[in-house]
Length: 485
Image (cartoon, rainbow, N blue to C red; front, top):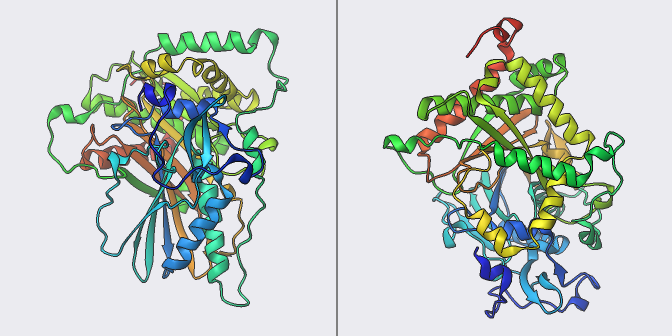
């Protein structure tokens, strides 16, 4: 989305109803000014690389269409940003305004046809609400694809919305006497705190690590350590089918292997997420060796979304309360996996203990004050991050709704939740994003590959490579540390 959206008002009416007056919706909440991260998401939006992400849900059983559509409308009322559009309001700037009778796009298909999003996948928030839904259904199983604009919500908020939708559906379809899902209360006014984070500095931070100093140091490192993008195999003119929307490839790590990874992580005093990061560094290095220059003196960078939610955000509707941390390492560091793993753990621990994610949020607060500069900066043809890796952990714990369980799976009235996977947006020269989460004892991995850089066959290859790199961690030993790459 270009500069006009940031600096100039739109004169076209919304396609999906008119904006409600502020006093008729949630008191004085609206018009609600955009937060810095929301402005950043809109500035980085484009037709080729839309700032929208996808969550896919698999349900076992016969989904009741009318009840599902009623549940969508019910869930929207609990999450105002997903039933709002953006508009310029005098004396307030660009703001969220709720839409009267929002009608999200819900496409039903019983033939398994390819998904065909309009507008090349991009959602124009000046004209539409930030939610689309596709349902591929049959009497035994349904696949639901939700597309969210990233300015409306982050992944955790998207999962929260889906959980509320499923809980409403479960309550409507449960048989008499059956245990029903339970919905947690929502406090809409908490949206006012979505860009407000704790001002109390952790004890580990000192004056020498004050925000301006840290911002300057991190900016210098980000600029000087130019990462290489993931090599595009298409330069070899290899043939293959194109990736279709949502351009994702999924893999599943079964319970036995996942348990082995947990044991390995515990024995080395690191987290599972540290292992995932190590596996991704090794994947980037090996892939670039196969299809690019693959020099060991090149910088590799993984962008990791981090939630900035605090107790002040409890019971808040879906919103974008996320920041990013960047892990940058030389490719040759992958030749000493245990040393790299320990180094990764030191940095990720600092992210948690020192609230480092707030530094990126603070930086955006300053940069978004100059929208034209931000828009131009984001259009530079350079690689900011080699790969994005997002780990949401246990999917069930991200629901604010509570569900009865059967063999570790959520019972949703007359259907059962079999799986929920996601795909983080990609931007120019960040050609791969990976989203991970556990559910019912399994690890689900979704790789979102740039369709302009990978064919389906190549996307399958890099997906298998990442899984292989995770498995290889189980065979890492001190002898391997003495070897060079």
